[in-house]
Amino acid sequence: MVPLKRLLERLDVSAVVGGIQSEMRIGNITSDSRKASKDTLFVAVRGFVTDGHEFIGDAVSLGSKAVVCEELPETPAERVLFILVPDARRAMAQIAKAFYGDISDRLSIIGVTGTNGKTTTARLMAGMMNDCGIRTGYIGTGLALAGDEKILLERTTPEAEELHRLFSIMAERGCRAVVMEVSSHALVLQRTFGIVFSGAVYTNLTQDHLDFHHTMESYASAKRLLFGAVSPEGFVVVNADDPRAGFMAENRGKSRLYCCTVGDSHYACSEGKAFSATLLEAGLQAARVAIDADGRGYDVLFRLTGLFNVMNLLEVFASGVALGLEPEAVLRSLSTSSPVEGRMEIVRDAAGDFFAVVDYAHTPDALEKVIGTLNELKPEEGELIVVFGCGGNRDHEKRSVMGRIASRGADRLIITSDNPRDENPESILDDIAEGIVSPGYMRFCDRAEAIHCGVNLLKEGDILLVAGKGHETCQEKAGASSFFSDRETTEEVILARSTH
Image (tube, one colour):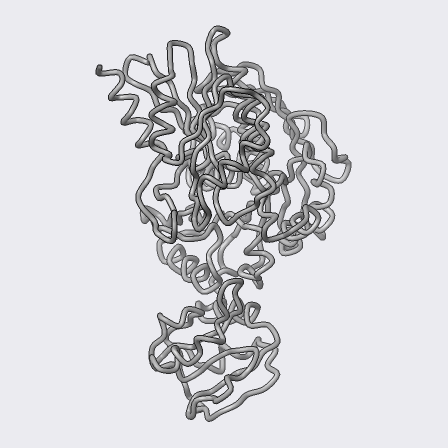
């Protein structure tokens, strides 16, 4: 239980309405009225579908005696304290931090942001730090890791109250650091407000989430917010091959800068330390890479492949150096790291006759990169078969773009559903088909049927790419969610084919 006064000390309070007991104590904070109880401080946050102010009455009926809001209900409940603030989202972040005793200030928190590569980079970094003796938690796409405990998440970056609760759990498990993916939504919606980051990594920026941000400029500005939250004693690592690297780095203040490149750098690294990597050899399950780390050279074999993964590895290596870890120890850890679930994850039968790759690629840039990588690695006589779709209720503009990319890179193309949500799956497939430039593609609304078709097309030397859902284990359709795993489905069909 925490004194209410302590939680309100940092808020920009515009008015206080109603009676209050001077010693009122709070045992729970929430922006979800369904989780309210007699000891709950309810924060009415405005959402894009619903407004928390509409549920103040529900929270009060469940026992809440204190409410933080931007405007009063038409008929304020008696014996309930209403604290009015200009920005309830910011207030929620401040309250959550105070409720959990400013635990984030006692952890070394490293944020990873960008369109593609966040999960791989963050998971590799958390694993590397643990290997190097820094007990580290992870928060990211669908999952949090606190020691040996796995906690499923709905969002890449949780709401503020959940985020600080996770920090508290991780500290209890002995974590000294946390690596977390930081989404553009979270930054704009102030879920991370008040967190001082020890380091931040920028992976890249390509088309995505324009249903929310509307323009690439707005999207970039959202990502940029992370670098302004890095401690002056901290570090920033950027993908210097990305044209917006300079824009991101300019917001870092006095933190140290590390620039990574695996190609022609668009951003001059004169202000920071330069890290570069050259892909020497590549196979479907490994890559040999030469690294130049600010003048020091290394030759390393990694169990990941593709130039995009080389950049992910390089950024993790640079972060390890920035943390003061021994470069050799960092590379030893990275050289034994396996692909993250659903990221270039290989599925094959025991005899190796049928070969598939499951990948989360759900943006134009990610799809283009994984298709390009697989075309470079497949045997000359082999074909690349691609199964992919686009989600409903999301950025419509990228659908035809992804159709064009896939049709240009695939020898055989199958388009299908990928979480249609509240949209007609056939309409989504029509949007994808508008960009297809090659004849003879196939389409299935049923994703399992599409994967079956892809596997049945496989012959020796071919590669099947199942893209879009990666690690996800559910399919969202018409307001309902049902279990579906690309990896499990692909594995089952390959096994069934290999035994017949």
